[in-house]
Image 1 (cartoon, helix red, strand yellow):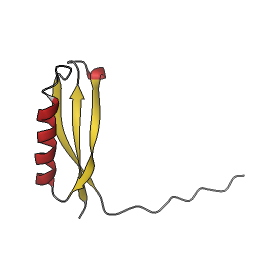
Image 2 (cartoon, rainbow, N blue to C red; image 1 turned 90 degrees about the vertical axis):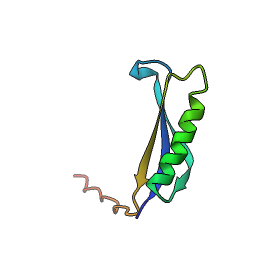
Image 3 (cartoon, helix red, strand yellow; image 1 turned 120 degrees about the vertical axis):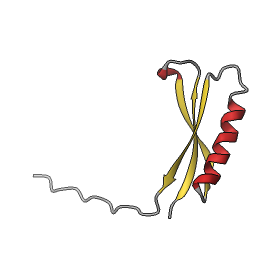
Image 4 (cartoon, rainbow, N blue to C red; image 1 turned 90 degrees about the horizontal axis):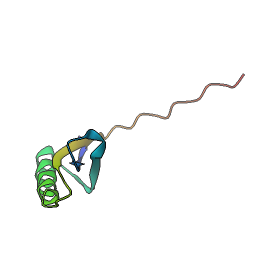
Length: 75
């Protein structure tokens, strides 16, 4: 079971190059909790006149970490 990281896609205009992704400082235990938090933050961001679009998102943070890949020998 992983934790969830809240994120918001913020755009200043319809052009994709105006967009940035902002992440939250907190990890949440469930996807539902994450989307509630992200949605509230996106609604707050939309109050700014410089924000054209704010889309809430969430990313699961896996609890499994892969081992470090060993480098080959230099010849």
